[in-house]
Length: 116
Image (tube, rainbow, N blue to C red):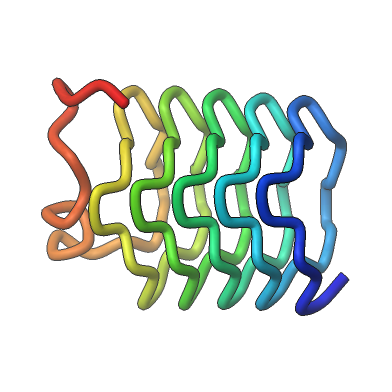
């Protein structure tokens, strides 16, 4: 599915474990509750996407565009967010244990009190 255009798609609760979505456009997609564990989302654009309660453990989100993306209560444990753009992302209650993420990236995200 590399470079696929799935913008505004309704993919909530979809099983995409291990999927190759590198460089895909998922702008505004509803991926709430989706299983994206071990998925390759390198370079993908998930701006404004809803990933509430999604499972992204061990996913590759390096170089992804995650502007205003909603990760409320998402499992991002051990995910790779190297060089990802997290400006305005919602990370409230997200599991970030073992996640590759810098303090600068966390500062780009919204405060935990902000509600989308």
